[in-house]
Amino acid sequence: MNAIELMIEEHKVIKKVLSAIRAASITLLDSNKVDYDFFTNAIDFVRNFADKHHHGKEEEMLFYLMHKHLSEEDVKEPLSGMYAEHDLGRLFISNLEYALENHQNGNNGARVDIIANAIAYTDLLKRHIDKEDNAIFKFALRSLDDHTIEELNSTVEKYEKEKSDTVKRYHQMAADLEKKVSTGVR
Image 1 (cartoon, rainbow, N blue to C red):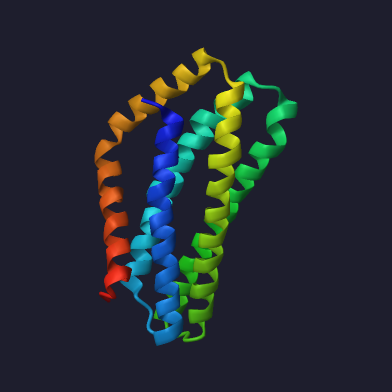
Image 2: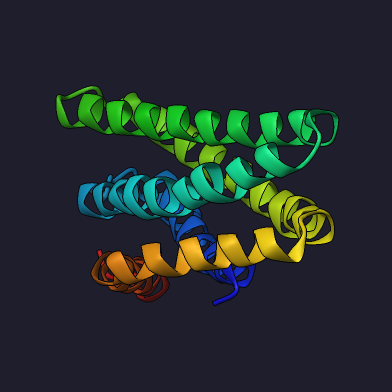
């Protein structure tokens, strides 16, 4: 298993959900109707697949090995940026969840907070993914020795086997979210 190729493939799945969230936000803007089910499922996907599963691998496996095997001078600034963006994404998702709750409790003005946090999250993550795919991952492949890359591949492969049911579930959820906004099923 090539761990970095897997992370790039996961980015493609995450980007499908980001596009679906953006489309649902535009629908909300146009219709003034909040699709709670869609946004609740999107939050579930983001928290449990994009963040816990995917970002967890980045932070606890790849970034850990980069910190361990590369100079602090080389990794401190770029990885600090990646951690900060992961945290900012978590904030946007928490704010989105709060806005949904406010709207369900009768605060009609919370629609703007739903849209703002959903769009802020999608914009942040699209830029973040681009940085990882085109800078961080390439830097790791150039800089880590073969033994360390093999350690990463082995660790990720074991983790993926343990989480295969979770991965299948969230890949299906991503497809369902994408289909829901593309067909206009509400």
